[in-house]
Image 1 (tube, rainbow, N blue to C red):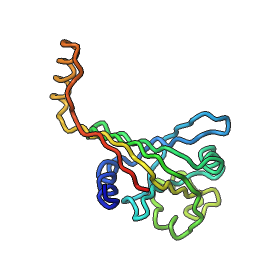
Image 2 (cartoon, rainbow, N blue to C red):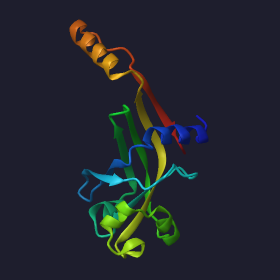
Image 3 (tube, helix red, strand yellow):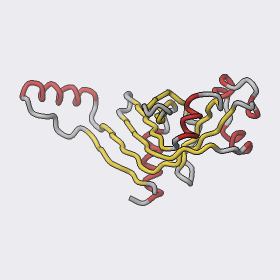
Image 4 (cartoon, helix red, strand yellow):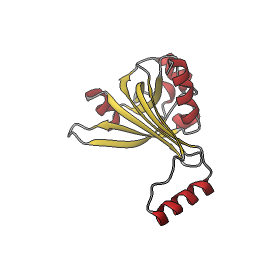
Length: 166
Protein backbone atom coordinates (compact mmCIF):
# COMPACT_ATOMS: atom_id res chain seq x y z
CA UNK A 1 0.00 0.00 0.00
CA UNK A 2 1.35 3.42 -0.96
CA UNK A 3 2.53 5.48 2.05
CA UNK A 4 0.20 8.41 1.33
CA UNK A 5 -2.83 6.13 1.00
CA UNK A 6 -1.83 4.19 4.12
CA UNK A 7 -1.51 7.42 6.10
CA UNK A 8 -4.91 8.66 4.87
CA UNK A 9 -6.63 5.36 5.71
CA UNK A 10 -5.08 5.26 9.15
CA UNK A 11 -6.05 8.87 9.86
CA UNK A 12 -9.63 8.25 8.70
CA UNK A 13 -9.93 5.45 11.27
CA UNK A 14 -8.38 7.29 14.24
CA UNK A 15 -9.17 10.99 13.70
CA UNK A 16 -12.34 10.95 15.82
CA UNK A 17 -10.70 8.98 18.65
CA UNK A 18 -8.55 11.43 20.59
CA UNK A 19 -7.91 9.08 23.51
CA UNK A 20 -5.76 6.02 23.09
CA UNK A 21 -4.23 3.35 25.28
CA UNK A 22 -0.48 4.00 25.19
CA UNK A 23 1.49 0.84 26.03
CA UNK A 24 5.11 0.83 27.17
CA UNK A 25 7.41 -1.79 28.62
CA UNK A 26 8.01 -0.96 32.28
CA UNK A 27 11.45 -1.43 33.87
CA UNK A 28 10.20 -4.66 35.50
CA UNK A 29 9.48 -6.09 32.02
CA UNK A 30 5.69 -5.86 32.26
CA UNK A 31 3.63 -4.07 29.66
CA UNK A 32 1.77 -1.05 31.04
CA UNK A 33 -1.07 0.69 29.21
CA UNK A 34 -2.41 4.12 30.09
CA UNK A 35 -4.98 6.39 28.51
CA UNK A 36 -3.32 9.30 26.71
CA UNK A 37 -4.60 12.08 24.49
CA UNK A 38 -3.26 12.20 20.96
CA UNK A 39 -2.30 15.77 20.12
CA UNK A 40 -2.31 15.52 16.31
CA UNK A 41 -4.79 17.30 14.14
CA UNK A 42 -3.70 14.91 11.37
CA UNK A 43 -1.09 12.21 10.81
CA UNK A 44 2.06 14.08 9.93
CA UNK A 45 4.10 13.63 6.80
CA UNK A 46 6.65 11.71 8.86
CA UNK A 47 3.99 9.21 10.00
CA UNK A 48 4.02 10.34 13.61
CA UNK A 49 1.59 10.53 16.49
CA UNK A 50 2.26 13.15 19.17
CA UNK A 51 1.62 13.03 22.92
CA UNK A 52 2.30 15.33 25.87
CA UNK A 53 3.62 13.52 28.96
CA UNK A 54 4.84 14.50 32.37
CA UNK A 55 8.62 14.19 32.48
CA UNK A 56 8.28 12.95 36.05
CA UNK A 57 5.81 10.20 35.14
CA UNK A 58 6.34 6.50 34.53
CA UNK A 59 5.29 6.53 30.85
CA UNK A 60 8.00 9.08 30.06
CA UNK A 61 10.62 7.05 31.95
CA UNK A 62 9.45 3.89 30.18
CA UNK A 63 9.85 5.52 26.75
CA UNK A 64 13.37 6.63 27.63
CA UNK A 65 14.29 3.08 28.69
CA UNK A 66 12.57 1.22 25.83
CA UNK A 67 11.20 3.17 22.87
CA UNK A 68 9.10 0.33 21.42
CA UNK A 69 5.44 1.19 22.10
CA UNK A 70 1.90 0.36 21.07
CA UNK A 71 -0.96 2.82 20.78
CA UNK A 72 -4.46 1.32 20.61
CA UNK A 73 -7.52 3.26 19.45
CA UNK A 74 -11.11 2.05 19.89
CA UNK A 75 -14.16 3.88 18.60
CA UNK A 76 -17.09 1.51 19.31
CA UNK A 77 -19.70 3.95 18.01
CA UNK A 78 -18.10 3.77 14.55
CA UNK A 79 -16.75 0.22 14.94
CA UNK A 80 -13.20 1.39 14.19
CA UNK A 81 -10.34 -0.32 16.01
CA UNK A 82 -6.66 0.38 15.37
CA UNK A 83 -3.47 -0.95 16.93
CA UNK A 84 -0.33 1.06 16.13
CA UNK A 85 3.19 -0.21 16.74
CA UNK A 86 5.98 2.29 16.68
CA UNK A 87 9.08 3.83 18.12
CA UNK A 88 8.73 6.63 20.65
CA UNK A 89 11.23 9.44 21.04
CA UNK A 90 11.35 12.44 23.32
CA UNK A 91 11.38 15.64 21.29
CA UNK A 92 12.67 18.87 22.80
CA UNK A 93 11.07 21.35 20.40
CA UNK A 94 9.30 24.39 21.85
CA UNK A 95 7.85 25.42 18.48
CA UNK A 96 6.25 21.96 18.05
CA UNK A 97 4.91 22.13 21.61
CA UNK A 98 3.34 25.51 20.82
CA UNK A 99 1.86 24.14 17.59
CA UNK A 100 0.21 21.23 19.46
CA UNK A 101 -0.74 23.12 22.65
CA UNK A 102 -4.43 23.18 23.57
CA UNK A 103 -6.79 23.78 26.50
CA UNK A 104 -6.88 20.11 27.47
CA UNK A 105 -3.09 20.07 27.83
CA UNK A 106 -3.28 23.25 29.90
CA UNK A 107 -5.38 21.36 32.47
CA UNK A 108 -2.45 18.99 33.08
CA UNK A 109 0.46 21.43 32.85
CA UNK A 110 -0.16 24.55 34.92
CA UNK A 111 3.05 26.18 33.71
CA UNK A 112 1.74 26.26 30.17
CA UNK A 113 3.64 25.28 27.08
CA UNK A 114 6.94 26.17 28.78
CA UNK A 115 6.21 24.08 31.91
CA UNK A 116 9.50 22.34 32.79
CA UNK A 117 7.58 19.09 33.39
CA UNK A 118 6.01 19.10 29.90
CA UNK A 119 7.50 16.36 27.76
CA UNK A 120 6.70 15.90 24.11
CA UNK A 121 6.77 12.35 22.75
CA UNK A 122 6.61 11.41 19.10
CA UNK A 123 5.58 7.90 18.09
CA UNK A 124 6.86 7.12 14.64
CA UNK A 125 4.45 4.55 13.22
CA UNK A 126 6.06 1.41 11.84
CA UNK A 127 2.99 -0.80 11.56
CA UNK A 128 -0.74 -0.58 12.19
CA UNK A 129 -3.51 -3.15 12.15
CA UNK A 130 -7.11 -2.08 11.80
CA UNK A 131 -10.59 -3.49 12.00
CA UNK A 132 -13.36 -1.50 10.39
CA UNK A 133 -16.80 -3.07 10.79
CA UNK A 134 -19.01 -1.97 7.90
CA UNK A 135 -22.26 -3.65 8.91
CA UNK A 136 -24.89 -1.96 11.07
CA UNK A 137 -25.32 -2.98 14.70
CA UNK A 138 -28.55 -4.78 13.79
CA UNK A 139 -26.81 -6.86 11.10
CA UNK A 140 -23.98 -7.61 13.54
CA UNK A 141 -26.42 -8.79 16.22
CA UNK A 142 -28.28 -10.95 13.72
CA UNK A 143 -25.03 -12.55 12.48
CA UNK A 144 -23.89 -13.24 16.04
CA UNK A 145 -27.26 -14.70 17.05
CA UNK A 146 -27.30 -16.89 13.94
CA UNK A 147 -23.75 -18.07 14.71
CA UNK A 148 -24.76 -18.91 18.28
CA UNK A 149 -27.71 -20.97 17.04
CA UNK A 150 -25.91 -22.76 14.21
CA UNK A 151 -22.53 -23.16 15.84
CA UNK A 152 -20.88 -21.63 12.75
CA UNK A 153 -18.72 -18.55 12.90
CA UNK A 154 -20.36 -15.34 11.70
CA UNK A 155 -19.52 -14.22 8.19
CA UNK A 156 -17.20 -11.35 7.43
CA UNK A 157 -18.71 -8.27 9.05
CA UNK A 158 -16.00 -5.83 8.17
CA UNK A 159 -12.57 -5.10 6.90
CA UNK A 160 -9.28 -6.01 8.54
CA UNK A 161 -5.93 -4.94 7.26
CA UNK A 162 -2.38 -4.00 8.01
CA UNK A 163 -0.54 -0.82 7.16
CA UNK A 164 3.25 -0.70 7.03
CA UNK A 165 4.75 2.76 7.14
CA UNK A 166 8.46 1.88 7.12
